[in-house]
Image (cartoon, rainbow, N blue to C red; front, side):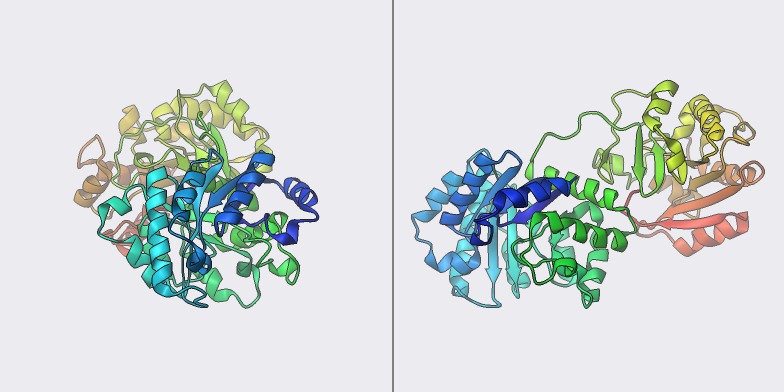
Length: 459
């Protein structure tokens, strides 16, 4: 399922066949659509559409092009419209110095007024910024703490530099990119997208404008969002289903389109692997651990209400034969439930599926014995997280409950794993200050594989 985070279905281009457009969107898996206002009149129109169609939502605002036509009394009406229950954002608002249809000082004043409205109603903003990113960011980064309170949103139809994108991301904003990402000559834009964490990406059509390459020259519409998703899947090395799930979660989270998932997933898929989340407990407290910041990984809620039983894990796994591998991973250290690993792995091996264990390498310390002979024939691959090349830094970053000597015990675990597990790999997060080359050399000395994991990117 997808969410089109930016559409203009109230525009005249859709006057004759809106129901057919919405039907095609539904058939393409478009779950929600956010229609965006550009002035007071269109803001009223998108609210009316949201009232008529349950899966449509609205954002109200004055586009920078229209700011010169807005009277002082209009701002109070816009604030009133912003309080409508189906209005989920303020936009599109911002600056456009490419065409300068409105004087730049008038645009700035309108932008700031609408930021204040967003603050008052506590709703995210949808930013339009063209040839004006530096000015836009200067306003968003204002030292006026009152203006910054509750300020969040998305830089819509982004086409700036990676440096500018990072500044929006550093402010907590999301980035959305439209149909031009599919154009043959858009290598620069695709390279930019690759620098944006997928957890901060939204999908949009900006219809009726900017149709993707597969429909270029035609009126754009929400069902064409799938073409963009296919391009993003190539850029991020994910599946289209991954892109759909992740960006839908991102959009729902930003705009509050529906309540978040209440139950954590036991089994969850990313790309063509199935991951098993059997515990949220861990014997390390890594300073960068994602569990400290969110319940979600790649759009999956992994915060368990209780630890699942073996039958529950098997039931949640479904048809495991359609995956490349099944991985014990999740939001905790799997070897805390060694007996569960062994029993589930026995079931998986009967299905002739590859089984991998992602671990912090503390399993022998946890279980007070060498557990690796017990995993022989059950586990085909093990990835051991070793996030520093020496004991003291490892202790500072990973904060293992077994003390500074844990580092050496993990190395011993890796050496022993080679005797029982066909494939052994060390993984290291590219955390600032960690010498990745030293970690790589350490893996070579131990005679195992090595894979760096990008800092702040999980899954």
